[in-house]
Length: 340
Image (cartoon, rainbow, N blue to C red):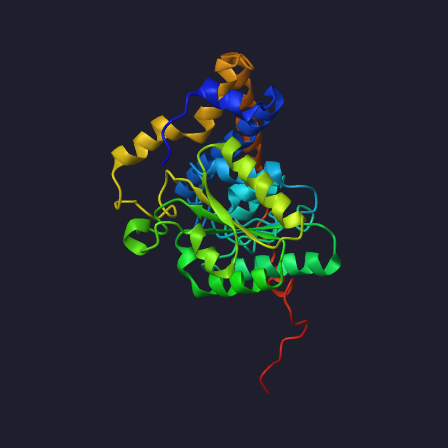
């Protein structure tokens, strides 16, 4: 990972306003507090099945959403709560889906990994590794066909980068000049095996070179660096030049899922990343060093966010469970064949 930056130097380099910095801080902190609460609810037995938290990776999706425009699409894997929050989906609906209640985005039938919002152009969470990558190309194909100048962000991890369908999709996307940004969220451990042990390629984005797809590596713990790279990638796609790859080097603090004790790395390694590279602390330091906000200002933001998250948690507990009749809704077949 790149060395820790001086906060004031980074702020000057970024040339961003106090309002932008505060916005990024608030959005990343919202994801962090929401995921912490989700972890608590999981521990209480209120969330069933798998639950993959985004803690540590907040700068990736906040930076890229800052580079997106209205109508752009996004599709991702099962580590998806942060993506939903960053694109503006209601925390209440997300949390209620986590607890399997009818107030959730999938009426309590999808859970953590399967939520969608047509309004926010969020096309899922997907539980099958790399399954969302060709779907992302399909979304981009629709936009190219319609000629509407939209871009799709297709997120996947370093583990998914070894799946064959990724490269079939690369070939098709470049062949047809599709406006899709392939975002490799390289948190360096996939499910539990480090990149160094799982792949011979030192750089994952460079695999696209074989298909003629340009790209770059990005510091995923720096929201401003992610935003800048995102703006470059978006401009490339909107200009009709085809796909672009961003390998965003990030780090998750928790295990692969809530059931993962993460014994494949040391506590010291995780703590060192928290102490030296935390994406939220970097922006916090910029705000304080640049005198854009006081400690009291930031504490007030944290209180507001905690209140929103607590309200979402209460909503998720109070919302009723889906009625059994919901088993027969939102399915492809309107009639179920019966045996004679």
